[in-house]
Image (tube, rainbow, N blue to C red; front, side, top):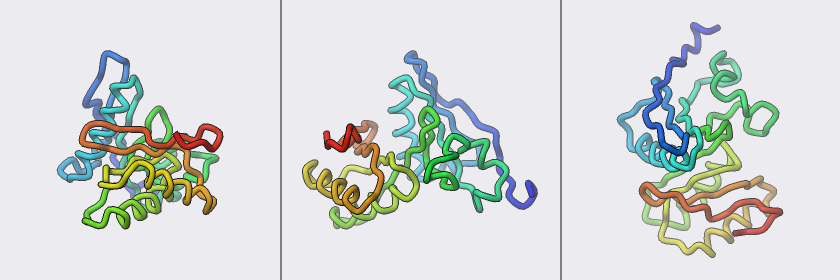
Amino acid sequence: MAERHPTDLTYTVIEQYPSGGSVVVYNSINRGTDDYQRILSCAKYFAKQGKTAVMTPKLDVPYKNPAYDKIYGSLKGTPYYGKCPDLMVDKQGYEHEGYITENHKHALKNMLKHGLIQSDKIIIDKTDLTDNYIKARIKGKINEGKKVTEVWIRDDDTLNLIYENTNGQLI
C-alpha cells in the first residue's frame, strides 16, 4: 500500500527561536506557492511564541495513506481525523484560509466555511470587515452547530486572536 500513496516523510527545521519554538516543514511541500508563504508566516508567529509549528503536506486518500498517522496521529479521536490541516501547532491542527476577491463578506463566509471543515482552529486572512462583523459571523457558525475553538486573523506576519472559546464567550 505504501507504493500507491508515497509520501516523503523527511522534513527540515527551517527556524528555531530563543523561546524554544521552531518551524518544521515537510520536504514534500511545494515551497514556491503564495499559499506556502502565507502559512509560513503563521508558523513563524506561533514558533516565536515558543511553540513547535509543523507545516504539513496534503495527503491523497488520507485514510489509506500509511503516512497519515505519522503526521496527523494527534487528530485521532477528533472530528478532524482524516483531514489534513495546514499546520500542526504543538500537535493541534490549524487551518489557514485566504481569499482572492474584492467581496470581503463573501470571502469571510467562504474562509469560515472551508476552514471549519479542516479544523476548529482557523486562521483567516485580514479583510476590510470590522471585528464586530467577523465575530457575528463566527457566532452564526456556532449557532449552526459548528465547533469553533479559535479564530485568528493574519495581517502580513502578525496573527491576532479574534475569537477563542472560553465558555462560549467571544473575546
